[in-house]
Each structure stands twice: as structure tokens, then as C-alpha cells.
Length: 399
Image (spheres, rainbow, N blue to C red):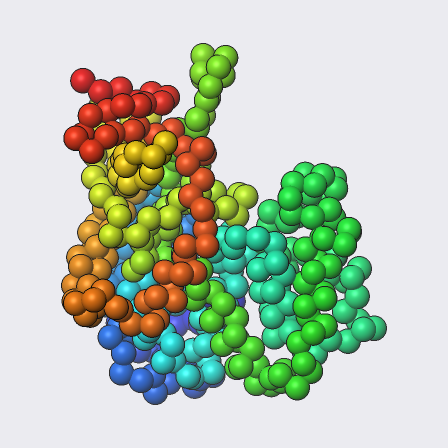
């Protein structure tokens, strides 16, 4: 994820684990094998293209899977395949690596790779932050890591305006914002503009904090910030949800809204990555789910779906909401959720009889709770405690 490309000549039957061993033995990369004994490896191999991302197991054979990639994309891709997608083999963070294990990592080169991946996910809108100030903080840290100490002659506001897309997520460079419309994110060029805030925070980072040659402290600070984000370390799946419509709009054919479904050890999240917005976050303790096959498997427009059920308080009553996420990747989501939910149940034994858990668990939960679920963005069904449907929207219908 740092952009380094490694070329190797291998046999078609080589496994992921064998390739990882070659990567770790490359002296120029400096990864080595001196990572402390953790519950899971820090990194894994991934095959990725625009429509599909898959973490490979140790015995998977990447070249064989790559030769069948078009069939996999046709089966699990979000849209009909219009042109060939060539997968890229990535050395990325292992989705099963726990945060507590990641905190033990001290090796500079390993931290640099974790930082590069976290930075990518922040800039791509996959790690939504609540509030512009948090993006400014991350952008300032990134600038200090990559540009060195603040230099008033070079690091001007004009510089950061020109390079806004390098340090801030893509939604800050959208046409609406560039026209100067205030959408709560700050007017471009005004005092509340994200690049203005970022520059002010960049100036405040002490020049002696880390060096260009060894920015490990700054990189760890960036990672510590990202560890508190709900979607950190997630696997991302492409899906779509029915847009809520009312009035005359309900009589007009409208397209579903594309979303990303992020799944990690803490829970399941629905993201509008075009707006870098976390729409829904559900911990495993409050989530029930079900995967459903398409009712007409011969119809390419009839997609599998994932039903997500969760409790809410509504008008003083305890009710359950159900969200339907349509996706050809629903079966992959179901498999990963099942594994994490089972692990979550086993981990509950770490809590004592009073319900006290490890401090790291409490910190993650507290940070996750700073997000507010945006239920108005969804088309939902509502059930009471006895399982009766008391409200439905859009195309929801029940026998």
C-alpha cells in the first residue's frame, strides 16, 4: 500500500504463504521476521480490482486465482463486467489482526506499511471521521510525516490549496465545495476551510517531533488516531441500498444508492464513501443478520441481499429496524460476520462478573459511540417486540 512494487519469478503453484516469505526476506524492504509473536500475522496477501477485494489464505494460489478473476468478478462484482479487470496482488493488513496485537508492533518498516494503508483509507473515504477538525488533524500529521517540519516559505496556504487532494479526503475537492457552497464543511478559502485548519495544526507540531529520516513517532500517532475510528482494519464490500423517497418521488423510478459495507472485529458499518460519511454502525452485541438468495436467480437484476436487524428507541418504545443491503457479495459478508460474531462471543468471557472489560475495549467502544446513526438515509422496516411489522417503507412488503 506504500506504492512499492516487487517483481519476482515464481511457479504458478506458489502459495500465498510462500510469497509472503519471499517478501519478508527482501533486504531492501527491511521487514524481516522480527515481529513479536502475535495472535495473527500483521499482513496477508490480497487480490484486488475495482469491483472485488479478497484476502487470501496461506494455502491459496494467487496466480491460479488470478487466471479465474474474470469469472469471480462476474459472480461477485457489483455490476455487469464491461471490460476486463486485472487484479493486483497486494501485501496488506490482515483483517483478522486485532487492535491489541497491532499496538505491540514496534518495527519502523511495518508501521510505515500500516500507516500507508490507513492514509489510503482515510483519503478514499473508507475511514469516515465525524467532523472536519479530525480530517485536519490527520492531514497535518500526514504533512509533517511527508514534508518535514513546517517551513513558512514553502508550506503556504496556497500550497495546501493546490495539494488539497493529497492531504484531505476526496469529498473536500468536490465541485460543490469548490464553488464555495457552505455544506457545513467550511467555505473553500475561508477561515473554516479544511486546508486552513490543517495548516494551523501543522504549524503547531513541534519541529523536533520525529525527523524526516525517522518519523516513527509521528506515524504511530497517526495510527493511534485511526485505531479509534470504527471502520479501522475493516474489509470493504460493495453493495446498494434503496433510497428513501416520499411524495411524488415515490412514483418515479429511482436508482439504489451505492454503499460500502465495512466489516471488522468490532461490528458492521454502512458507508457512503462518496461523501465520506458513516451512515450506520452496529456492534455484534446489538446485531442480528440473515443472508438471502435472490428470488429469481435467472434475473441478473435480482441480487442476493443481507438483512441487518438492530434495536432502537422510537417515540419512547423499544422497536427493531431491518435494513436490506443488496449485493452480489452478500455471501462473503455473511461468512465474515459469522466468524467475527462468534469470536466476539468468545471474547466476552474476558469480562468479569461485573461486566468490566479491558481498557482497550472500552476505548474503542467510546470512540465508536461518537458517531450517530443516520437512519433517515435508509428505507427500513419496523417491528415491535413481538415481531409484528408496524412500519414499512419503499418496496418492503410482507405476506
